[in-house]
Length: 363
Ligand SMILES: Cc1cc2nc3c(=O)[nH]c(=O)nc-3n(C[C@H](O)[C@H](O)[C@H](O)COP(=O)(O)O)c2cc1C
Image (cartoon, rainbow, N blue to C red; front, top):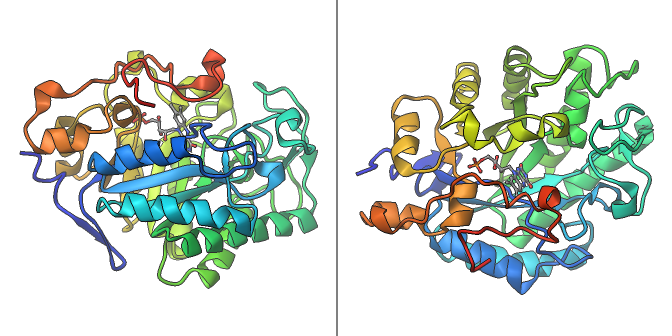
């Protein structure tokens, strides 16, 4: 049963034991200073124990001005490495490959949270957050590229097998990629070559420091806002990233203005973004991760069997039941606690202090 799901995938010398990914989730379980807590440990321990092939920890902020949630993990300082070292060691002990997603929130946060003025490619407020950011100077762009590089090196030193650059959902890197939020007239704005420059410079710097560690990149292949990225444009961006040495592409959709597309609603049905992953897969040879309303291994198996993606992220489904992969493998389908896409886990929408799930009292 589910033999495609349980066929390992070799990516540049790293063997991912099965095709199910736990994608990055901002849980808000870290300390105010971005350190790993026992709650973080417990959460990822349960996911790893439950059988995911690739467990992506995070998001993890690369700089204080990019730490856009009150209790987001950070790698802004060497002092953050120890906690993550323990975390990666623990989750790897269950056989899962460990990833670390690196983020700068850009304009999709509030200066009252970061304690710093918001920064973005252009001085245009996010329609949801409504705070006008400052346009980054070239010098600051270079500094943030170095922040990503330093954080990536710290993630590697902490034991991550893969570093994922968060270039999706309207946060800083994707803000540069998209003409919706990037109105610059210098070498970082305008045509696609220029809008991808910030990300390409990050990849180049990170790659130079990270031999032997996989580098992934998450994008919103379709932003569902006027002037935003479309699949057509994303199909031009992704080959550039693969040419620069990105090993895995993770496909998401949406920005804050189209929030219900970021974690798709129940009404959108099963796997609404499979076509996006399949479209991206047409233009690159590197493995592609598909995400969005994939709630069981039967559907994951279908996606892989049809060649629409190489890896399948199951986020909310594993939050609701961290054991879903092993239960499915062992034929215990009736004991699976199913996610019903209520989106109570989106704590920033419900007003709760951190992620919870009505199906999982153990968080
Ligand atoms: C509570 C919550 C937190 C999330 N945090 C992140 C994050 O930090 N980074 C990221 O790339 N995606 C994040 N996402 C998006 C998920 O990784 C995933 O793409 C989305 O939930 C769709 O997959 P699913 O239907 O399997 O849950 C988050 C989603 C939710 C619901």
